[in-house]
Length: 218
Image (tube, rainbow, N blue to C red; front, side, top):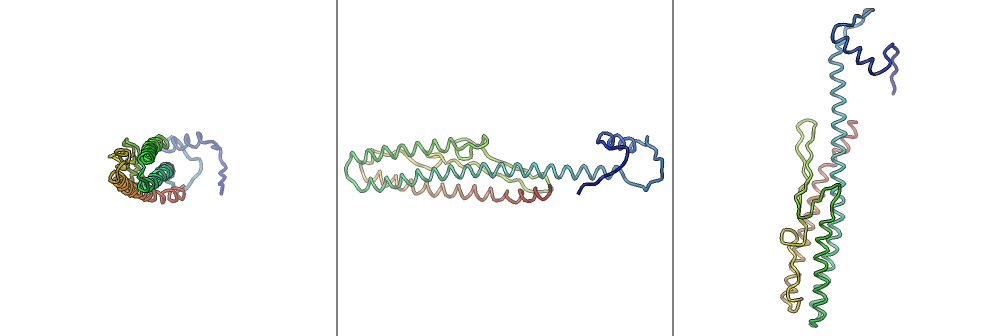
C-alpha cells in the first residue's frame, strides 16, 4: 500500500529539514495541531530501519555460509569417491599374488591419495576452505537480541595424519599385511569423512531459520 501525503514538503531533504526545525524549536505552526512526539517517532523509524538492515545483513551472511558448506559437501563427496575406488583396489590386491600387479595397484592407490589432497586444497568457496590444511572458519554473530554466536569450524580432510590418516602403500603391497593396514586406514578415513560431512550439515542447518526470520523481518 502506498500512502500519499499532500503538503509543501514533497522531497526527503525538505522533510528532514522540517524535522530539524521542529526539534530545534525554530518552526512555528501556523495552525493548531495535535501534540505529536516527533522525536520519538523519528527514533522509532530509525530503530525499525536498523532492525530490517541488520536482519537483511544476517540473512546474507547465513546464505553465504550455507553456500560455502554446500560446496564443501560436494568436495567431500568427491573425496569419498576416491576412498571407494581405493577400497576396490585393496580387494584387487588381495585377490592376486602377482607382485607386478600389486605394484600397479599400489601406484594407482598413491594417485588416489594425492588426488584427495588436491580435492581438499581446491575446495575453496568465497575464499574460504573448511577442509584443507589451513584454519579457515565461519562465524556469525546475530545482531538482534541476545542470540548466540554460530560457527562453522574447520575440519582437516587432507589425506595425511592430520586429516584422514592415509599413508602411501608400503612395499608396493608385496605382502598381505601392508594391504590389510591400508584397508584399515581406508575404513577409518571414510568414518572420519562421514562424521565431518554430518558436522558441516548440522552446523549449516542451525543457520537455516535465519533465512526465513530475516525475510519475514524485511
